[in-house]
Length: 133
Image (tube, rainbow, N blue to C red; front, side, top):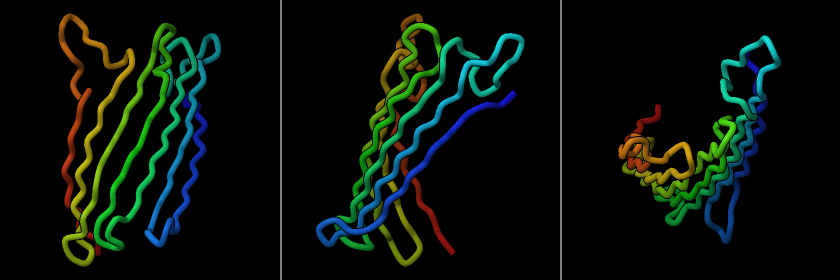
């Protein structure tokens, strides 16, 4: 089976005459009943994630700054923390061409070293250029 519930909310408008966006989502995948398998949660406990992001235009219609946080549980029975903090910025190079830079730092038991090896992606930096037409 595939069982999960996700609630999403988005607000866009202005704060102090600057364009702003606030985004939040909450998702939960329950533990499967006896004799079933929930492919969205193979763990022994409920899998959950709360994500909140804010974005504000520091130069209206040209540049924004972004901050976000994830507080999640992997579904593991013991210490299944999977949290993250993201900071970023966007810059519109030309009409419909945007450059984005984000940096994410993940934490919690899901990101602990195993055998002296840090999981890939514990710290991520992304650079993306997108063209919209």
